[in-house]
Length: 375
Image 1 (spheres, rainbow, N blue to C red):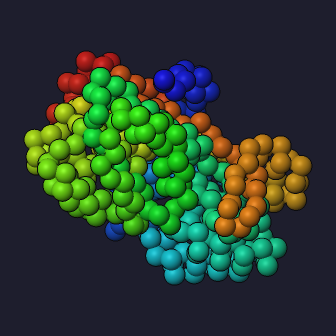
Image 2 (cartoon, rainbow, N blue to C red; image 1 turned 90 degrees about the vertical axis):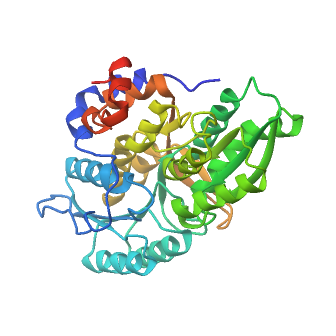
């Protein structure tokens, strides 16, 4: 079972390649990541505040989300005040306080965890400022709308990747290294994975060695936990479900140390440069590509409707729904399609402009790029 082709996405985005090419998915250190606001001061529709969560565990927030949100909000006639909390919940709250005091028209929040996200949304609501949960739903929160990818589907693609890779190896042993237990997305990824894998575990087609969530999505911790599980299983593993490319990279480092890289399929997510290189090398079986430009544009369009007080227009955009079990509520949502990327599909991510060939096709993968027509 494979996800649908990216051909339709390619057609839709071809005209926008100059925008997407400006985003880099290579890692940045915290000291180099931009943390100041991005507003230009000339938005006819006022200012939209955006708070991103961090840079330590994923390159996407500064490499993709910041420039694409900036572009999308500017196109809608807003100034964009985009800040990054660098994983600090107090800073996240302080940034939100400043934006609320400034009177932003809409607040877009990609939270570090549901607790701080909910607190910020409640403050904004008291000030009469609508909020949009961006990428991560705040459980127990009060945001008006939610924009993300279908995160259960992301997990299904990861689970199907392992199932496909191990289909000729009955009884294969699998270790799962999951994301932060405080991140609702991580919970949804696991749900999606198990929609595919649990029947295989139950039938004995695959054997689950252990599943472990990693606090804060910390890559170093993920690698250490995986190594402990691998050692505890006698140094044996046939496949690894890794919730994102950062965790996958830490796992691959351990596999290399044990002479198992390239022999043990590993999943991932985010289609980072490092993740795509690992896929090209064969150290990582697949990653999940999420066209973040679509997410940024959806958030900007929702912000426009909310800034105008046009609930009908907002509801027309948010035609899906997400369940918040903690808040016992249904949240109107925009849920976008993710895509599975294996070795032969890496080219499509480059062709769409999300990763530059000049960043990807270096060192030991340069010849692999040539063989696959990536240029």
